[in-house]
Length: 299
Image (cartoon, rainbow, N blue to C red; front, side, top):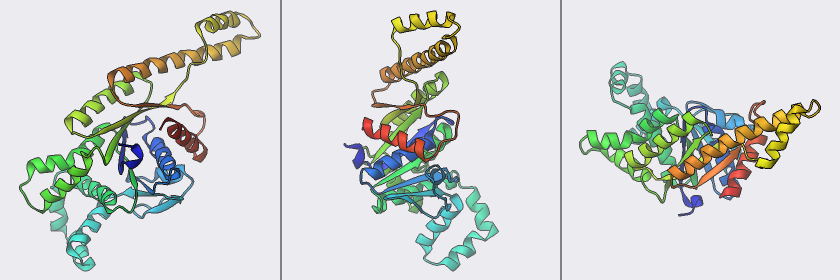
């Protein structure tokens, strides 16, 4: 199954690995490939900002040709779901402003995650977009988020709530529709968590895994012979600064290669390396463009 044909890409990983920048880059890459793309995030509006647009919260905002974004919000998602069911704005407002009703809703486990996931998967199901990209919460919360439909199917009897969980789960576990994209860094803790995440998402939740995206990867530039020459250069006063910088780069590069090889040997998944880009400055449109080009080249 071609990645272009997948309707849902779930981008997930440990906090701080660059999920959001990868989500933005993937959205840009797929939209340029001719797909109509919606990128969704939870309670924040970072995707529009990264791409030079202004977020509008739960309102869908156009970022570029064939590329739109939305920030999922549990209250707005609940209001929209209730309206779909009750067909009356007045009744919905009356119910959701009733303290007894809101107190009752507060006792339903994982209800915020359920209604936000429902909104996300409704966007997948309508066909208005060819691809929906979900910038999922960080690992632990993200897995809980994605596991809500199955948890409900196991816990509730047949009925309206069970039916909602059924169709959501069908999309999530469909390997022709969904791909879980694992974002990580060339670091011990991040790689360990990625391997654990792959097992829990794939085997535990039955979700179809897509790729590993190794972010902030540092490529090798020097052979062993050239490294020996660098050692000589460090002893030279004129070449010392440049030689040290090159040596430090190579140490980082070899560390990156080590973790890349570990990921490749541990997971039977395609792996895409994404370069370290201007660590001294904030990410913006130019950096996202560069990552999108790298993802396209690896596709």
